[in-house]
Image 1 (cartoon, helix red, strand yellow):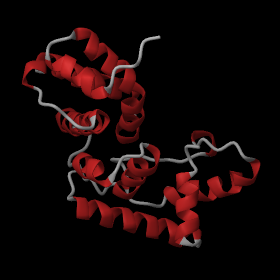
Image 2 (image 1 turned 135 degrees about the vertical axis):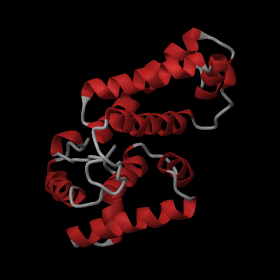
Image 3 (image 1 turned 90 degrees about the horizontal axis):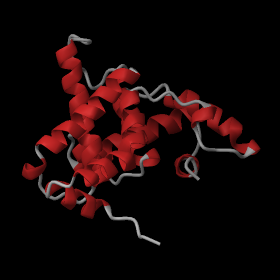
Length: 197
């Protein structure tokens, strides 16, 4: 039984010009990129185009790429930049305002959260309503931290913030959620940490 090749090895093989490595990276990360992209654009065709353009550029520039420590974080950050550029070119928005709720849409529904337990349904409904009251940036950091399970250094690169700024934004997002839900911070963290289980 063959062992799965690591992200770092796939990336190294891509840099060397291995087309199969590019295909494997695409297969491995498409779902993550698509879900993230849909939260920024809410346009299936445009998101697919942005992902396709990202991988075309990776292939064209493969010999100029440098090693990365976290391939998923690198790809999410690259896609985010592609989408911002796409919006500017398409002139869909006169100005890309990263604080606008139109930029990162994280609408929570009971169906979209992986909780099957009956007793947690009410908590999820309340969390859904509370999440939809956050700013776009607050939604984005909650998504990256608790759904993609990225660390603060990775999130700071994706969101173009300092690590300290990332911590502050996360703290503000959690505090806003806590106030809306009127629950203890530790209870809120327990709910968020259980979302993917």
